[in-house]
Length: 222
Image 1 (cartoon, rainbow, N blue to C red):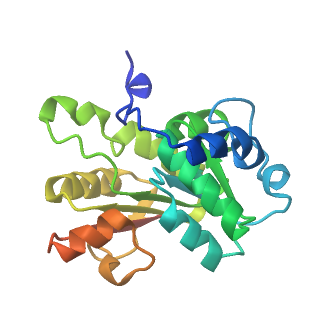
Image 2 (cartoon, rainbow, N blue to C red; image 1 turned 60 degrees about the vertical axis):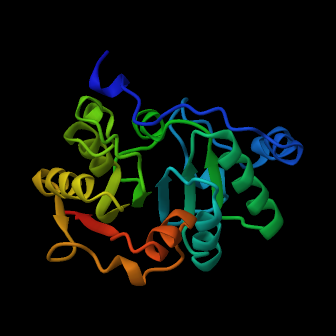
Image 3 (cartoon, rainbow, N blue to C red; image 1 turned 45 degrees about the vertical axis):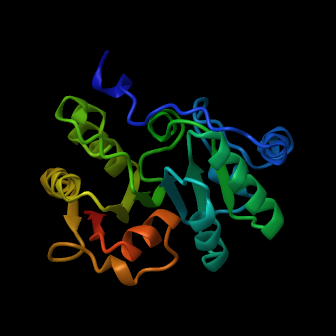
């Protein structure tokens, strides 16, 4: 199995309540975008041309919905592999009337490789990716040189790559990998001033309540 075939996420079978099962059935055809397939035309998907943001691992979608609602001039693609999170974001999109969010129920790396053109993204945001703490699993981490090169290629010049984690070792490893990429430059002299940023994920809110340091990195494509 090659590095590009190794999954960077765990497959979980979350229990789907009736409302969420119904959301997947009725709303995914309306707001969903397949991870695999022909090259994607964002203007066709969103009905306009606007800066495009990819969120990798949108969780239950609350932060995604808040970002999109407060940032109507940009369009958001939210990639999430777990059905309960996909369904919950679909419900948020429908209930809040959000027109600038689409959900990708699958692997973001597949989407990046197959459907998104080089230079097509204004930003990529990754909040609390799986740190795969055991050394033998480090090959599954999202932030490693081959994946970072792909992320950078899909960013437009000046586009931003944001990564947030509360795992100190993973934060340091991520900073080293991003710093080593010749096409990226750190937007700050070290960690970004992330704790003042809103909105926050539920996980981040809990981490801050419990006093765990949050490490944020923002790199720009040269």
